[in-house]
Length: 449
Image (cartoon, rainbow, N blue to C red; front, top):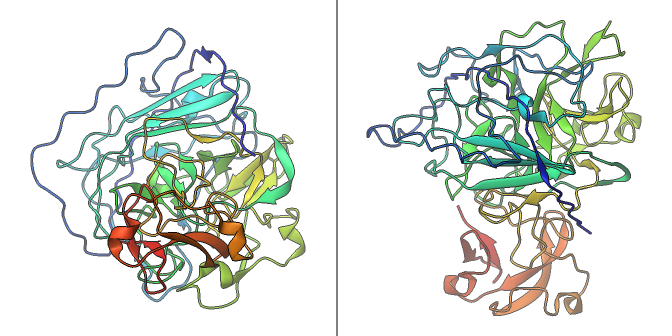
């Protein structure tokens, strides 16, 4: 299962300074607060072994042959009738930085300079703390501490008010590609972005559209993010324009985030060869097969040859490929699964290392997903991997739920049968998970919005 290797913290390198994006949403959103701006959180004092990643601007490095550039938001063009229009940005933090030219990849140094410099951004708005991101490394891990506040103007598209978080993530510094692909959490943290925000999978929870595609259902802001019930802002897709301004369409894409297995996430374009003589836009191999308004995973299919191994510009099932430098990477795409469809690397030991909300995707029955942010209003995790234990018969659920649960039953979930706590009234679900649960119609505790 998951194993952790933490060594002495080494000195972090310089951090990328990119000015923030300033998107406007077509959806009218509730304005949350108009008080004076809170003081920017102090960057934690540097330790002897590490330096905070808030330093003067530098040009963002990109992985060999894979830097990001796209005028359209990756994951925002699913063809839904309520798809947000391309509108001018809101007044706010100023134009984002230009996408850098192709350059060598992560290399041996701690990738502090890949992350966003949030020291000179306008932030989410007067009612919120300023964003804070710190990156350090050990011999074996990349560690990210963030307060989860966007570097651009926040617009509400859910009833949940934006709140600062205590994200504290650790991922492998030297990721290992494995033969067997692993499901990402059905709900909760799957990755994080270079500006210190959570990235979740391509589906929501049971309310109001059960496990539907949030991009298709048009419930995201222009940067493809929104807030969960604990005020946690997170992405379900990535909009390149929120990180880089006017990227050259003939250049490859820089890193926009990291998956919990340690492999980087690039934008949609990448180099075909080591000299980057040809740049192509990569596409998901998944195809829509039904109506993803509900149960997104049941309404997309990955049955092409490229699903097993990327071919041409078609990515594999996980939305990734082997780059020209021989290393694996994921690409954000315009269509499902938008960022990550599964893990192609070893995720053991990755995730929350303390100080933050329990891992996104932790189900009431244990099996905490790696992660640091609270889940969407529905995140309870998938069975077996990063969620409640899977089951086939009731006997499989003996002692599988929290000790305070009224009972534990083997019940259907969107990814198969799982051990879930039973209930008679809402109070029976209190304290069984780090998120609010209520007693559903079937007598099972489920997450609420």
